[in-house]
Image (cartoon, rainbow, N blue to C red; front, side, top):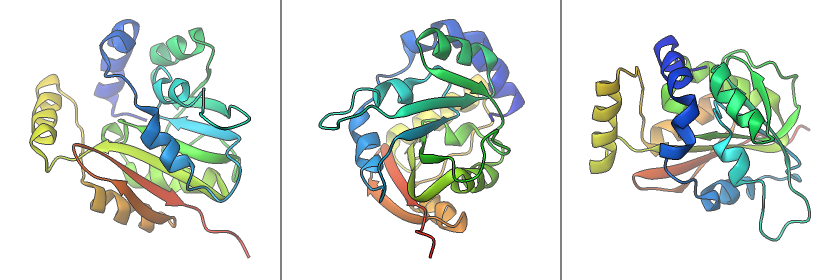
Length: 200
């Protein structure tokens, strides 16, 4: 799911990752999930590592039921830590998800899409596994902002082969994948949602 060098890095830092990762704000994720035209009962946390997004949405406000969440990632060690925290974890490639068609109500990609070597394939796979009316929720960083430029430089210094895009570019890519895009918010961190059209 990540580039080979990125996977090796995440395998090395898995034990300490949650200690140093920024806290996850569930509000933008929930705002994205609220765009679904169907009940969100199953969520795929794509390139989810230790399951930060899965844990962030595990206690929804004002809903009757916590969705079932599955983390898919290429890093076995990151997934071990997700499983240790009680999250269902599956090793897999974002460009060839081990998930059947129309199997989930939502796909969430939190701070991870820029690491994936074939982003178009990952978005196409997300669209494939979504049920009609389901949503893809992307939370990313804008390289056009001051903090975004600093993050790009930092990731290059670490040796990541990251590809950062702004919200409009991600919205266009989501559209290319066959989903209906909406930019929910902008700034250093931003949210793009892609909705799968209802089948007729």
